[in-house]
Amino acid sequence: MANSPQAKKRARQNERRFAVNKARRSRIRTHLRKVEEAIDSGDKEAATAALRAAQPELMRGVTKGVYHKNTASRKMSRLSSRVKALS
Image 1 (cartoon, rainbow, N blue to C red):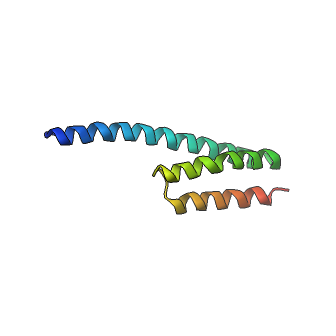
Image 2: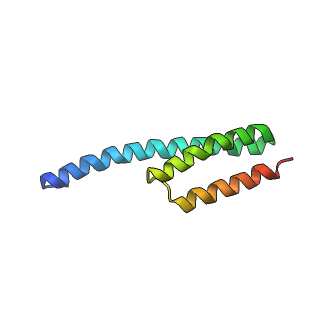
Image 3: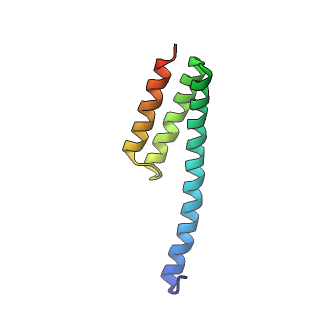
């Protein structure tokens, strides 16, 4: 357990940051799941719309430090290629 005042403050800040990041990660995963579901259903219009909604969320996660830039780019690339493959 933290003993010094500085360590106690850092522990409080880490808890708050963890909660914010967890909520942000959950929000991004929800958007990605909607894209996956649209792809699985075979509806290209819904998948395209879901992908368009997921892109800014994923990139916002990058700017906020939740995801690495390459990770987000890889996810976007793979999803967009799967949406493009729908006919």
